[in-house]
Amino acid sequence: MIKPNKLKKGDKIAIVSLSWGGLGDAELIHKYHIAKERLEKDFGLEVITMPNALKGSAYIYENPEARAKDLMDAFRDESIKGIFCAIGGDDTVRLLPYIDYDIIKNNPKIFMGYSDTTVNHFMMNKAGLVSYYGPSVMAEFGEYVKMADYTKEAVENILFSDCKGYEIKSSLVYSKDHVPWSEESINTARKIIPEEHGYELLQGKGSVTGKVLGGCLDVFPMIVGTEIWPAVSEWKDKILLVETSEEKPSPDLVTYYLRNLGAQGIFDAVKGILVGKPQDEMYYEEYKEVFKKVMKEFHCENLPILYNINIGHAFPTGIIPLGLDMQIDFTDKRIIIAE
Image (cartoon, rainbow, N blue to C red; front, side, top):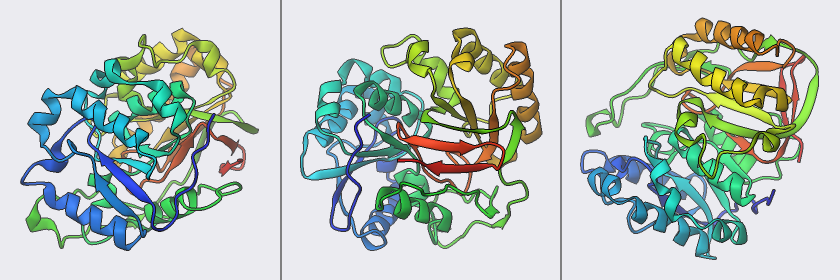
């Protein structure tokens, strides 16, 4: 896998809208301005916005080719060192006909997002580029009042620093509070509570090293069978990352999604599984039972599973590199970037 250069102050990063285009809607564009100022002042980055990124949700929905052009142009531009996704959504898969994987491969740079951006991460994997499952412009960088310390530290320690040996620890705090996205809420901060669980070992033991591959479980059914979905052989010795979206899929749905992975032979191929904290801890205990049940169905009771990772739709969220070697000590519940 190709490793992009780390970011440094003064670097130019591009904002792209690859799925939902709400960042450019009149009632939400204040989130863009908050995020842009934060990226510039707190992180010292030069922010540019790709030509179609702020054209609004209607235009973005109707023009997947324009979305893809922004992504390809951002990769082509040698002055751009990172690409941050505006937000997730539900139809990034429509960009597939317009992606040139050689452009991505030949112009490696930081790429980050989560949720429906899972589709883009599998594009990066196909191109052989390490990418970063982490915060979005609209949600985390555009957070009202202040960005979560946990998320800010992840950006600084993983994107701006030599992250070899960096341990991704569980957040000490948590929030299930949802502040409405409106200009009237700009000065309203989330209510923060202590994290009660930390990382939980669902089954298995020991320590493994491998490259993480995965993303938002809800998105997998849209890309299974497409050109970006890896063959079972490509999952060999990987560490599977899964987390669930704000849709809070029912335990039955999660069961079906996992059974599909089992039927493909993916559980037999991977070394372990990392599972994200469910948003608002909805179905927190139920999901745990689903994972153990499905593993038993596929005779994978010894496959180690670490649960409740601060990633994706949980608040606060961190960053997990996809395609870098990661050491997961399941017994001691530690996640360390190994390269």
